[in-house]
Each structure stands twice: as structure tokens, then as C-alpha cells.
Image (cartoon, rainbow, N blue to C red; front, side, top):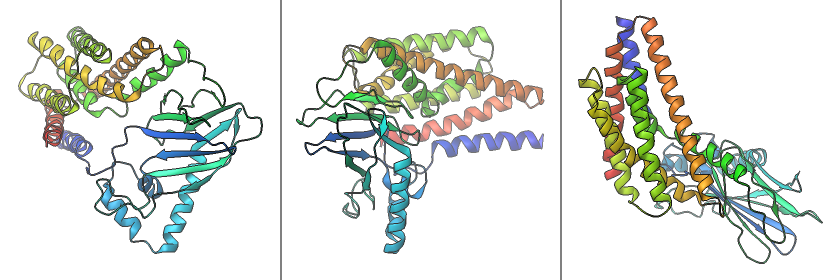
Length: 373
């Protein structure tokens, strides 16, 4: 019994720590990359990222003010060594290819030491890493790659004439299509668009959608029987697919400041109900459907930031939604597998459900307040 109590306490503590990790961090849901092709046969790539965190080798969720202060306190020679290591890191994790041949580039930090300490997003090294180099003679296409260390990329290519090509959105670790240096870029195929948005949808759940993960986990905790669980997940899927489609096509829209607190509150509701109910009733099906409508608007907020491939909106929408569903099914499979393992270990199933639900409720309540204020 002591082991069971220790396990439950550890699970709740892990949930709370995961949800309430230090907050004042750069909010980089995407890595914005602008590639400029110059008339003198050179290129410039500006990568907007959490440069301080990259330089120190820490997660981007760390406190930005603390990271900036840590770097600023280093003696100049140590700062220079840190920047040199960062430049080497960027050369390994970013790739620019002309006609499939990697190009070498120099790395500079144009904002280093220029951001005021009172800036909304404090940083000592700035928020831009600039890559510069030469375009090989006779090159016809260019492509860009960022490793999985970076959030999904929004790539804009500006030609020599100053005109911008359509934005490409790349999943983590993905490579852009080959973009012609002259003339119009060819449209992506439906298959290429679907592949990219499928990955984006899945990654929005695992590993980057902790709020949606906790909601689905809350459903699985109370409803382990396949029939009722499938019914709830189907209702949730139907609802968020409906509002996601309406939002994507401009029929309905709610600001994130309204949607995000409500999503967090929906997690609180499901988790608290888990504590006081031993079994889900049919009324929960209607509640889950209503909350699915909210979550669909949350997904729509993400898609609105992605930008749309020309003439491929429907393919992107369907693929993103399929990716979300695959992520949710993975969460359910993991949850049911863990609960089955706990049962085989003779751990108290109901106490596990209640303890984890309390942890989920605590995290979601914190998010609700955080998103309101």
C-alpha cells in the first residue's frame, strides 16, 4: 500500500510540475524563417528563435529573464565562446541546399546586446540568428531544413526582385520543397500537403498539445470500457471537426483569449467529474460533444497561424484533422495500457483514477487562471 501511495503521489506531482513549469518564456509555437536572395548572388536567412535557450542548451520553456541574466553575467570571453558554440550548433541543425547541395554560411546575431532589459521578451543574444553566404553559380533551386530542435517552420522566400513566394509550413525536422530561384514556384501536390499537415496535426497532440492530451486522458480514466469510450471519443471528434471546418472557412470565429480559458476549464470539469463519479453516464456524451466544439476552435487558432497552401486548403484541413485523431488514439492507447499494467500490479484502480484526475484538475485550473489574467 505504501508503494501504491508513493506511485500515486509521484504521478500527481509529475502532472502538476508539467503543467505549471516556469512561465515567462518566449512563446515560439513556430520558427519564422525569411530567406532573402540578393542581387549580388548572396543570400540572407533570418531565423527567429529562442537564441538564449539554444545557446545555453536548455528548453525554450525556461524563464527568459533568467536566461538573459545568466548570459549577461558571463565575462566577454565566455560570452564569445558561447556564441561560437551556438554558431556551430546552428550550422549542424540548419541546412540550406542549392540544387540539393548544402551551402556553407556564416552566423551572426544582429540583435546581440541591443534588446533593452525591460523588453517584453528579455534576451541578451536577441531573437534572430542570421545566416549569410553565396549562391552557387548556375543554381536553379533552393530548399531549407531545420532539425527537430526547432518548432515547426514558417518559411518565406523573397526573390531578387523583392517579391515573396507563398509561405511554406514545415513540420519539425522537415525539409521544404525545392523552390526555383527564378520564375514561379510550382504548387505542391495534394499528397505533399497532406503529408506535411498530417505530421503537424499529430505533433499538435504529441508531444506539444498537453492541454488536449489531458482532456483525452481524462476521458480514458473514467471510461475504460471500449464501447462508451469509443462513443465519447467519436462525439469529441465529430464536434471538433465541425467547428474546425467552420472556423477554417471563416464561418465562425472566437478570439484565443476566450477559447483558451474555456478549453482549460473543460479539462477541469472532466477531471473533477472523474473524482466524484465511478462511471460515466450518457449525459457525459453531450458534455464531451460541447467541449469538442471548443477544442475545434482551439485547433483552428493553430491552423490560422500556419497559412494555407494555394488551392490545397481542403487537403490540409483533412490531413491535419487525421493527424490530430491519430495523436488522440495514441494517448488513449498509452493510458489504457498503463491502467492495465497497474491492474496487473494489483494497484488500486479507482484510487489511481482519482489521484490522476486530481492532478489533471490542478494543472487545468492553473491554466484557466493563467489564460484569463
